[in-house]
Image (cartoon, rainbow, N blue to C red; front, top):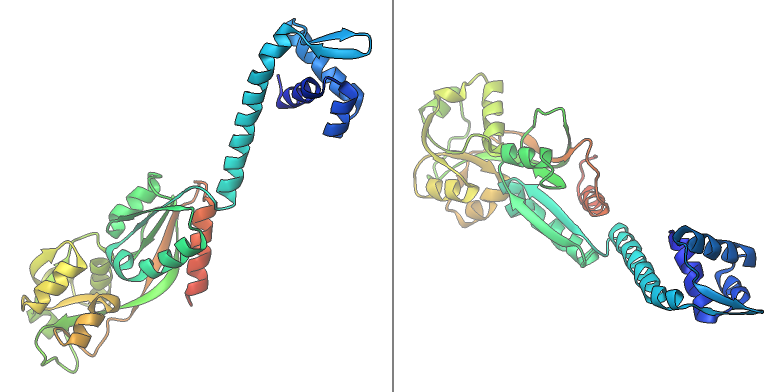
Amino acid sequence: MTLEQLRFFIAVAEREHVTAASKALHVTQSAVSAAIATLEEQHAVKLFHRVGRGICLTEAGRLFLPEARAVLAQAEAAENMLEAFSGLKQGTLRVVASQTIAAYWLPALLVKFCQKYPQIVMDIAISNTEEAAHRVKNGEVDLGIVEGLVDDPTLAQWPVATDSLSIVQADAHVPATIDATWLRSAKWVMREPGSGTRTTLEHTLRQHGIDPAELDVTLVLPSNESVRTAIEAGAGIGALSALVIAPAVQAGTLHAVPQPLGTRFFYGLRHKERYRSPAAEALLELIAQSSKVQT
């Protein structure tokens, strides 16, 4: 039984006329007759009485008509759902982002996305870079946006935006320049291992010949806000994104060492072999339009 057979049967049943049905369907009369004959033969039942030139439903045909209509309606509903999904009128977009990105960089883009595609449900999770990569790999989310590089051959990674890290402290008397001795002697407040912020800091330190294990780390905290607050309270120095420290620097509760740690990237992250939904494509296009970084 095919959907075409059901459509032909319903058209004839509603008109009680094969010719009228074929005209409405824009097919030949013989095609309609053949489809109904095949349907009857497949199930060994007559759906129409054929008396002279007239045609009307048998008892089986009357019972079958509402069932045929229901099946066809369900098929049309399924087709409409797929069209709505591909047309960004239905669906859910699942994104995981590391903390700095989720709190400071991504929200403005999500607002634009929701304004443009209000019928798409947004499901946003926050994880550090390591955890985000794990969730993308396992298919828990459609996309990841992270701060650190991920070494996994199953994942595609590309830059979507730029950021910078700065060393900050509560004391207004910041050195004009910093050297290895100053960095090793300072008390540090750090993000947890696996976070993009900490990974970037450690990579930069190694580039300058400093082993991160040599630093005096007094506190390890699980969020940018807790690190920032601890530094403001005088716990030591720390390295945070320019996005994170901007309000505190402006308010005078934190002071940045005038020697930035260089530019870093935010990265898009997806599984190389998993299907990328139209909603995910739309968000990536919006990110590309809003960013100066070529993806």
